[in-house]
Length: 440
Image 1 (cartoon, helix red, strand yellow):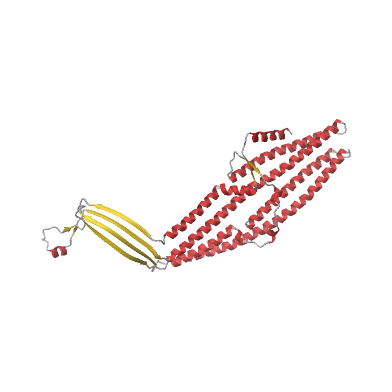
Image 2 (image 1 turned 180 degrees about the vertical axis):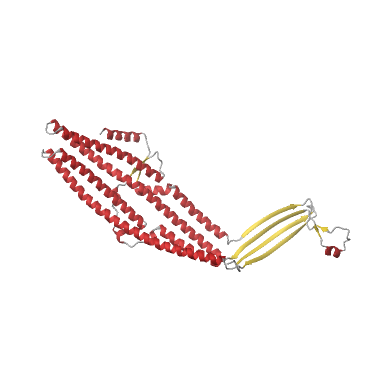
């Protein structure tokens, strides 16, 4: 009793000191994790990177324009020897040098060049692959969100079990304190033994010890939840939901409806993987097609030994380049064969994934029905245990029952209460597992 009072006083003092307190439902906890989990942030950044990759692939087919400025000064102008035939043609004496320079001391060039891809069979395939890559990254984001959601549930739900057990223990402690008080009064009147009082005090002490252990377990569980949420460790976090409120939703349709594989992000990822495999084959096929590019350039060049007596010479060029693959040593054929094999492997993996999801859903449905039946059984057992406990108390007060019977009925009641709470928790976990299997 003193420990309970101490805990209540500590909570009151903590509140009076202004500790920040946040109350979250399960959905609010999931939403908080979606906004603050670093892995979700990285997955969203990967999606932005996919957009940048699409823009990068598009840029390959867009015109390119470059401007150039170049200045060369030759302190010693390079010279080249003329062939003998040139010397004879110009009538140069044999003893004169045949070296001549084709450059002046100063050269300045300004130009602009443009090029553009006109046709390339792999270009459109690359664009399709980039867009599919974005879809693939989007599915990865959904998959990561689902993973974080499951982590939040795995951390949130055990805390509810502890809280529900703590509520039951608190109620049992209050009832036992009342019985202990009445027994002490009966003992003072000479109608009960000291042993009866001792048994009740021992039972009460055990319940208080169990409650203290639950408080520590709750702190550990809340700490684990804060870690998953990336919630500040120095702020108080309270849970709004309870096991019964989360079990209110009907699951009858989920037990009978056909399985929609599109609800599972990993199935969508597998489908996108097949489309990427088909594009991979298409890429190697179109890699054997000719590709055509156009280019043009304009330059304005100055040459002179100084900057006053030189001359400017413009140059303008337009052209096109056609590249026709003829023979690559069967490399493309081998690459295409490998891509076909990879596509067949991915198709088999998708079929295996369908079977795995089907098995997972069927098992989850069976586990849910089993947990449902178990809870109904434990509720019947609890009603019976409460009836037995009430009857033994009445018999004890009337002097026709023993304290041993009361103690045994208490232990049976406490165990049955815990069994019912555990059955509720198991049903909730089965419900969550069914939702996860169906992709909700």
